Amino acid sequence: MSERNRSEGWHFAKIDGHNNEEALGAILRESQDLTSLLHHTIFNEDPEHAPKVLVDGSKHVASILGDQTTSKIDIDLVWPDRNLGLSVKKSNGGQVWLVGLDRFLRAVVIKTGQKIPQDVELVLSLFIGGENLANFPKEFAQGLNASSGQKYHDQEVHQNRLVLESINKIQPTALAETFDFLKKNLRTITELSFFSGLASNPEDWAQIVIYNQVHSGKNIFSKDNLLQAMNLRANQDLVTPGDRNGGSTIKLPTGFLQMHKPQGSNLLQFHHSYERVIDTLKVAP
Figure 1: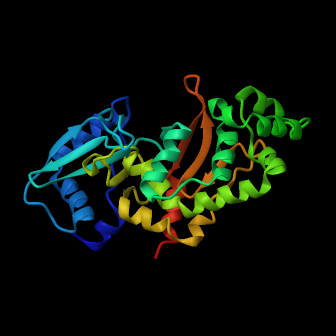
Figure 2: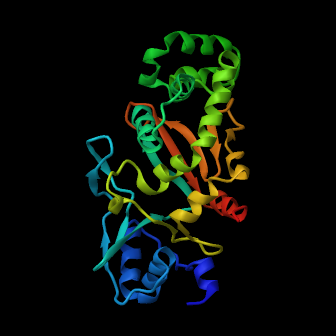
Figure 3: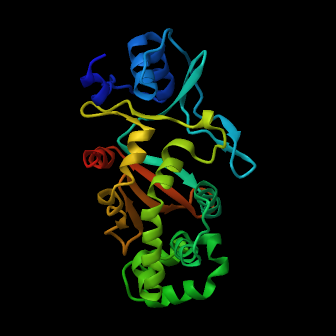
């Protein structure tokens, strides 16, 4: 296998239709060259045999919070002595992780062994809103009062949350601490979003992200490479307020974070971006 193939990855044929993972699974079953490339990317050696290819994008597994969660693995390549989990992205951008604020904060504590600063909990509660405002009604009311007359005020009322400009008006120090927290924990947040989710068993963690409908550029990203890039100051500095609607999103080097309310609860919705991931890896050593 050439250095060029290892560094640039595999250029997949475009797959249309609803069953994206199943279609990619069929390609993997027919191409030992491709499965060998993936094996070599992670384990730095070629396998002796072709793997079993298991497609299950909705598998429920044990979580680090003591309940059940959905595995990040869409396709599992299983050899006799090891497995390799693939997370498949069928478009250049979209949701990569949807999680409640309490579960997110508890996961960060478990992964880092550090407590969440009270100011960070305050700011994220105001930013995500909904049921998370229960402990901060006074601050929420202050934020709405501060944004009165602004074009995003009605949005805040409708979504039952505050945007970053409003938070900055009432809690500037806490907001600055929160961005510092996100930067310092960027590696952990990226690992949770893209690779492990809340799964407790490492066998249920993805080790490669595949963009299988991208026609140009690199479309295989290993866990180690992406997480190492999150340690770089240049990438941490990409954690900034969104520039629309008073800062209704938080930009990340791999995409962005926003509030999403799919079924009545205000949740953290992490988005991925193929272009931003490419740019992130360009600054990696």
